[in-house]
Length: 365
Ligand SMILES: *[C@@H]1O[C@H](CO)[C@@H](O)[C@H](O)[C@H]1NC(C)=O
Ligand SMILES: *[C@@H]1O[C@H](CO)[C@@H](O)[C@H](O)[C@H]1NC(C)=O
Ligand SMILES: *[C@@H]1O[C@H](CO)[C@@H](O)[C@H](O)[C@H]1NC(C)=O
Ligand SMILES: *[C@@H]1O[C@H](CO)[C@@H](O)[C@H](O)[C@H]1NC(C)=O
Ligand SMILES: *[C@@H]1O[C@H](CO)[C@@H](O)[C@H](O)[C@H]1NC(C)=O
Image (tube, rainbow, N blue to C red):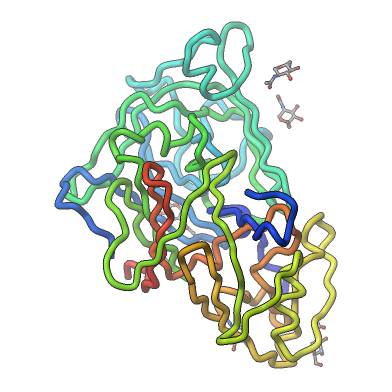
């Protein structure tokens, strides 16, 4: 059986800051009765999470992979010759058929915000989502459009003049043929959906990743109530959380620069070395399922917030006989990825600079 995708590590990444003694570097959803809470469906498809929105007038469905590790919202656009676009099930967005599409000149502030480039007076972008197996790219025109969301009132809500990328030369990761049409960047940069919607959503959004099926992402509103823990959010090029320790039941673990080592010390079974031929992946801890490794419950101690993970937040079956840790090793860029976030309601508050966690069963159905 083929290896399942590892691309789940690339999305919804919260980076971890190690305690200063490890590295030199120091670095219940309350839906406030506000009927205008923007919402969107998040669907788990082939190992990634895609967000369903509509773009343009009349609105056309888009399914963007959710990415807190990048900023720009982009979707594949007409014209897009077959060799330059990947297959998508939804029909391709055609800017010529939308009355709200506005192209952006090189000299406008939107072009500067999107940090892009000029071609014959048009503002263009070119993005590569690089590391690991998620080797996808997109290039095209920067433009503005109306995005249409769902809402708590059940009525569609429009966000006009959102800067986005109209992609005319795109490739998805070969491992994620996931029916997506592009990417929804939720990162901290000024071109991201979150930054552009900031005043309408008071800098707040929350999501709950299901094991399968779909759930809802809320823009605005906060995560509060019993069982909620919060940790400071540090905003730089990405979102960062401060890790203070990792423990298994009562046993606190010594700090290691390598999570693989931390995990393997907790499990009484012989790890398997795997080479998948991608940089970074050799750091992943894997076991032969038939050796029945006893998987630990692990608590991640963020500053001010202890998050208790279940084995399914830590290990993933990637083939019939192989299970691998969701922790990616390395010291500098440890990522608290999708799998570790499953079945937690996670709320970001950009204004108060906090991230909150609440253990929750996430699937809508
Ligand atoms: C692909 O997208 C279409 C909408 O265009 C949706 O109806 C369908 O369920 C999706 N397929 C998968 C496998 O997610
Ligand atoms: C803009 O495009 C030029 C020519 O293709 C290239 O050399 C330059 O690196 C680009 N700049 C950015 C910021 O992408
Ligand atoms: C599409 O993008 C790829 C990767 O950046 C590039 O190699 C190729 O030349 C581009 N094709 C066109 C027609 O611009
Ligand atoms: C896992 O163990 C079984 C039984 O010992 C063996 O047949 C299989 O090849 C092993 N798989 C891997 C990936 O090592
Ligand atoms: C992984 O595979 C094992 C053995 O087949 C099974 O017991 C377990 O439930 C699977 N875990 C997940 C998360 O699918």
